[in-house]
Length: 632
Image (cartoon, rainbow, N blue to C red):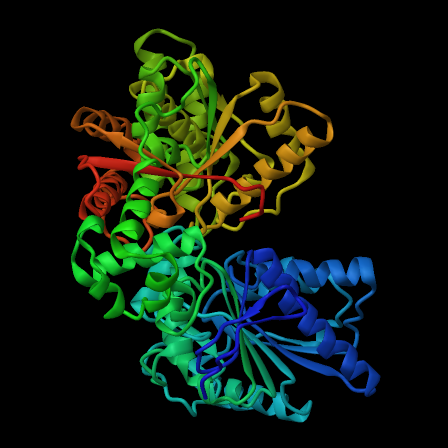
């Protein structure tokens, strides 16, 4: 069945047309989270009215965390009662004890179960310690428990970058029941950061089977972020295939898909709506259509003719805004106007680049930092987190050894450093695979990132006195999973803004940071700006940049900063100062390239896009978007 009506929903979302199952897109992740949580609350209240228990299937992972926060808020502030809720959790890593922070049991208890009034005996998480000889019987019993409570009313599902659902990896059987599964290598790579290295990720899990999950009376599939866009297209527009397990839910009959605008960006109705029918031809849509048309025809803008428009279903655009040469010239001028001669028009501006991690500044906008300093602006960098979890253990050991030997070499009292070196050695030797670091080790790892950040910023031309290491509290968990932004985080940022009084700030605005730190940092900055506005203080202009994963599309770019070969070389040197992330980073993501390679390839690719459109040719470009005051 093809759903073909774009309509507003009650939750300010849009029902996306031309999809094979109902797909609702919301502008922001927060709106998506609220919509799903509201739906779950409705299921719970309806069951209560019917004087029965509501049975939920819940899933782990980063995607539903915002839903769980909203459910906690609904319980604490609006009295949502979970006393008659039964929960079955879709998956658990095999062999991971409940006390381990990476266990799904521990995560869901910390983020949901311990914060609501659900009875412990109504929570069912697969037991990771079951003997293999008893596994088959245990799995049968788990499924039987679901049947005994009347089946699952509502299932909340996320999916992986390979389309897996819970532990049901590509090519899983569609009628499978709860069972022991082997985790796909792609899944294990994605989990590597949570376990402090891919080698520490379990190879097996206990998972509900697709057949078990498909028996749920209602299913909600969620996705957030651009990195999920490819699988979203397979789910909503592609064929049903167990190669992409989530696509099987096209046949479920009562599955709804909840997306934010980033995860929905690849759907045909969102990416190229003119191929499906009439559209509202505003300026942004015109730019998108002409850039797409250039790609389809392999022509530059000024070489497009009327037949190109007619042959690619752009009759309406040509009729209302043509002829082709006027449309092409209009878009050519709009895109060319984004290319700056100077990064900032005004002289001697005060600028802050907010860098979520200690290397995001030079990786994401190192060339622009170099140019800002060349142009005489006072350029500050605010490093928002320590980045201390992304350092290899042997680097921490090496620094502890070095400091001890340094003190000995120069006759400095080194009894304390010897003690620290021994403590670090013991901590690292006794740390089990996947365990968080001790406080001493985290301090040394933070010091490594601190020294690298200083060195990289200085290469980019910044003064040491203009570097600010904020060490925001939300990050100080010692694990990949971070706390929500709090008042302390916002207060630190407000104090910096009040002290520096910047004219312009640069903020990491990408939606695809797999660890979520970029998004959390942006949230903290925007809350700080709200505080400034409420106090009648100076509010800076905000420019958004992207991290190492994605670049802005042409129609999203408001400022394009050309980089010369010299700028590129200096930027590379600045990135190289982050030695702990060089050659092999602890959390590289699924992209095998080093961070400097990703940065160079992205900047060159942006310049090539401009050149392919017939615009001036540059070796590389860094792109930025002006913040419109809305949440990301």
